Amino acid sequence: MSMVYHSFITITCIWSFWESSTLAIKQAKSIFDDLKAHRGLVYTPAEEAQHFARFEEELRIQSELISTEDLTVLYDETRPAIMQSLVDEINSKQNTWTASTGQKRFKNLSLRDARMLCGTLKRGSNDIRKGYAIEELQDLPTDFDARTAFPNCSKVIGHIRDQSACGSCWAFGVTEAFNDRLCIKSDGAFTELLSAGEMNACSSDAVVEILTQPGLGCTIKGSQLVSPVYSL
Image: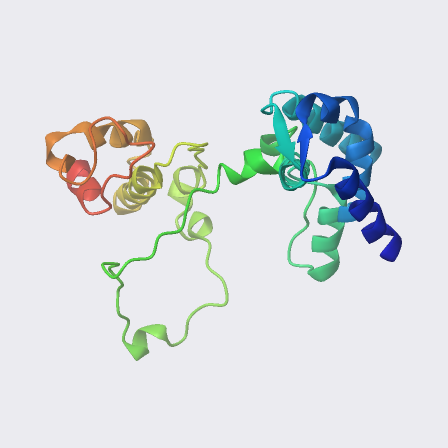
């Protein structure tokens, strides 16, 4: 550990606090190796090659001066989103499911790319929470899968949508829930997939202008209360 720490202190002293990005590019592999030792990441050869390629690529578009702190952040954010070492750690700590690196959705994505899909958590005092009577919470099943509970609607309920980097969970959540309920209520007679895109576009409607700005369904959320009204 002391050797790793000494290595990082050494490169910090060499760079001082600010470094020319041009010089940093020329020393990219050396810098990368020092940061790798400092962070202690364990790669497969393919993962390390992917990480260095992304690190070097983004280093080239940095401003003229770059700090050691920024270089460290750049290293962390350009690492592969899913690494074999992470998968092995997850699988060693539980046996209810099996993690794998074979996630096509995240192929070649960096950690920063993946984080951009996470959205944000907002907590407010206006959250509407349903209260349950004690008798409603008794005799709950150990597990419940709506796809098997309502087999005529398994394809609708099991359909996974992808909102990507569009901050439209308010539209997707309501659309999916409403879609499932329509199918269940009709006992499988209604299986058409409703459009989350249309719901997202309703953020420009006059009825929600007081809650959001026109046409910004991806960047400024609509209303979880207005969305069901639009659906009806």
